[in-house]
Image (cartoon, rainbow, N blue to C red; front, side, top):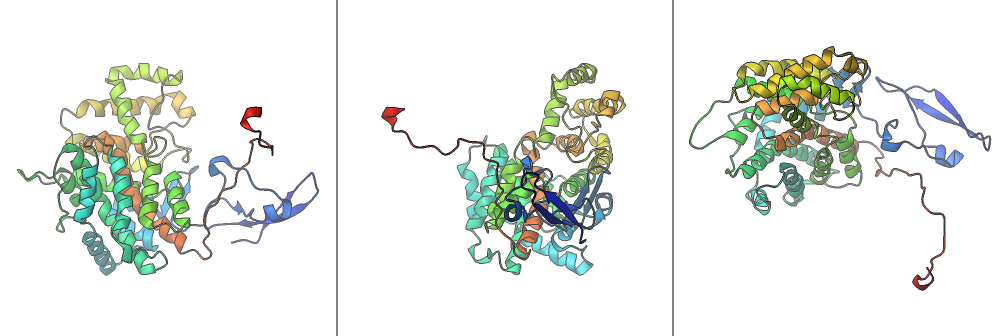
Length: 429
């Protein structure tokens, strides 16, 4: 951290204040404005907190201008190519890549916590069969807090680690049960002879009357998708988890709050919107007409551009290759949608309108196509996102609780309502 300061002057009163400037390992410096209320009687105004650093974090770094995404300093390109989702989980939680014995211990712990209590399974019976899977996920994850009273002391490091492993271990099991419940199928127990992603596939799609070996290309595609969505700095759902956690709420309630935030169409629902868009287009020959509607602002081009990444989404480059590898595995029923996606991708990348506006395909464009190709219903897309992001959520929650002097979150506001006024009795109004 540097010792630079920025002088802020109130031109009305002539008062000034020197605010420290903090510099992180990477990225833009930040102005520490905490002294403003006491010294100048002012707060900063920053709707949606787009220019405010809400915390210090050593987990994830994003440079939107350069298209950089790092987890604990490791480029996402290297992690996607060389790592596994569980190894990335360990990295996010502990700050370093695990040694062989550490990884084995971690994997065993995750496996041990993957089974659901019979009482938790009974939660599902209270939902309608046509309930949205995200509604079930919010409720069941929050309900986990009613089963582990003796191991939820957030001030106990061992309890925090146990909660982290439980979340990562149980999320695929709960997600698979959400899918099977909507399909009217029975619960499938986790299998300890399969790895994390293979087990997830098996719990979702296993049938008692036949044995299907999981396609390794499909497993790899889903694993990379999980890695790419594991954490993404202080996005809306992660910030929600941190804000809820700052009140000392239990971790399951915090993760449930993050899931609820992710459910929003502006956050986790983008990949589902991509499939809806491709279905609306219907045929590659309709793409030019759709593009014209986009230019005329009649419809939106879903899955292109990104709020943070201004030139390209580094995750999209990775998942693009995986998406194309799946092309050879698709059956005839899936081919039309994929052909529309490929042609839309080609046209958008060559059209000056989209090039000038930097509307390149983002990770949601390809992840939606991949999930569709894996025969995962669109209603489950955000659930899959939540499974992946649970690692980042719990890592951010754990980091926040370990900060010295952690305080409850309390954003300020600019009040624009009525001035002070006296109550008027009803008969005089």
